[in-house]
Image (cartoon, rainbow, N blue to C red; front, side, top):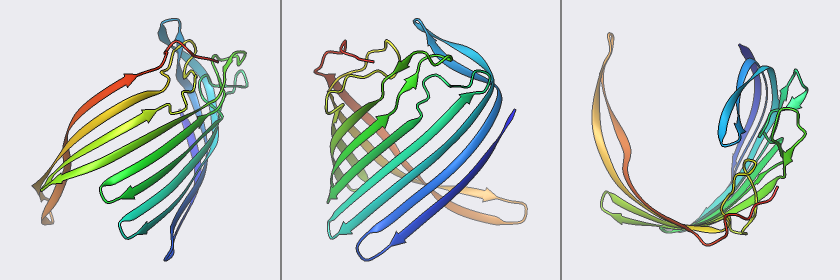
Length: 231
């Protein structure tokens, strides 16, 4: 049982120079008898929380520009989340108060270069909020290229994950990889098909594209010591 109250605001502006998008929303949710999964040794176990009150704000801002064969975009997000166990007046485990991200994307013809950085704030590891994990920032850099052969597309991407070799933990005592590399090849085959829709009062025929069939080949390798973590 529970309820949710939410309010949002959006803005979209376009000029001869840039395109601007912004959004802001606030919400409040109250949930009774909520099940929360938390790590317990080598396993995850469910815990019943009598009542949870969730209050938060989410925002995003995007600025983009296209010029001839070039385009670029900067997109940022921020979220505040206060998920309170009302019985203990504590934050739920592994739910950060603050999360943010920023991505910069530059495109030229069939090439694209993307830089992504995410921030995750401090998280408590149990219901009493006496133990915590430090916040962390992780960056990713990727270079992609599309090869077109008629209706066929091969997308090749090279990614450097955890670019700055940050030592961090998503969950307590769970190691995370340092800087590592990912090569990804996607084969996209576009298919068009027709669906006949018969309604009691209307006879219509609509054409729906099936976006693509993807065959994915992924190679990933880490060149760092996975045992190096920190709180």
